[in-house]
Amino acid sequence: SRKQGSNHDHRFNVVMIGDSEVGKSNILSHLTKNEFRHDTKSTVGIVFGTHNMKMDNKKIVKAQIWSSAGKEKAPFYKKAAGVIIVYDITRRDSYENVKRWLTEVKKYASTNVVIILVGNKADLHDLRAVTTEEADAFAKKENIFFMETSALKSTNVCDSFNELLKQIYYVFK
Ligand code: GDP
Image (cartoon, rainbow, N blue to C red):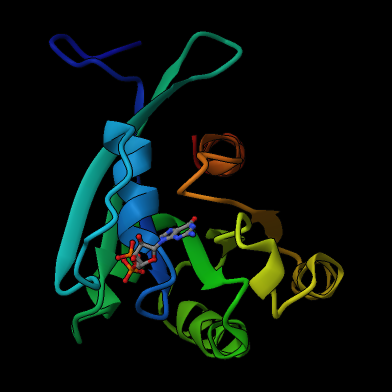
């Protein structure tokens, strides 16, 4: 039942959050343009990109992805069907702050919002400061999805996002 002139069947908003420098801009540009930027400045204001995915039943789901470091957060969360919380596996503080980000999500977002925790920079094995097991246990406890990614090596970036979109589709379609 696609609308005439539309290239998708469903459209959802997804908000990407997390401390600065964890790799949000690079994950976003990877999802939307398939490129990695080494010299990006840390996210200020709002970045926006779109990602389309075909579901098993041939429906096309379009995700509009927002990443905001601004103060006006409530409107973004309110419209979000999904939230991606990113931390850097080499920076313990960025992982500890996930709890705070989660509190913010619970405060502003819809109660059935689908949340995925993403541990980025998984390519930096030698600098790892957060174990996979620890983050996985935390995610299970909070009842949210979890994946480790590398925007540099393109590992799991699309997979984690598609997993999120599938869940959103089943919850919100
Ligand atoms: P943001 O502030 O969260 O948007 O972070 P950026 O996307 O701007 O990335 C911050 C820095 O981390 C940049 O220097 C990126 O090149 C680097 N970076 C991002 N993702 C990865 C990754 O997966 N692996 C490695 N090694 N570096 C990354």
